[in-house]
Length: 123
Image 1 (cartoon, rainbow, N blue to C red):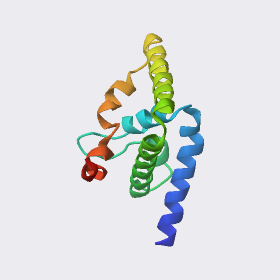
Image 2: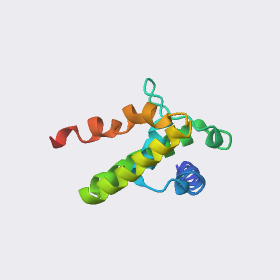
Image 3: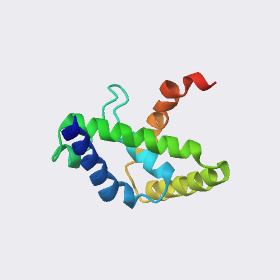
């Protein structure tokens, strides 16, 4: 159990330091992580992490990270969320204008997969 916890922490640290730190806002990070998730299977695909860590550790770490970013957004004041979302959408618009691959649009379906499962009892 302790070895698994340490391994998952290593995956999280690598992912946040090498990938998420380059994304300047919460909605951008949420969109990116959602783009890694296959909507039909629910599994995450990240070739860099998969080359270094066991698949189970990558899945657990990315799911934890996805959930944590979603939770942070929910805890953020609406005025800050608005600014963050505007910045994210502008960056996506700039990427699309530059011929980007549109990963953000594909990821939109997975942005709030936690809302249905974890927050269903709050309504």
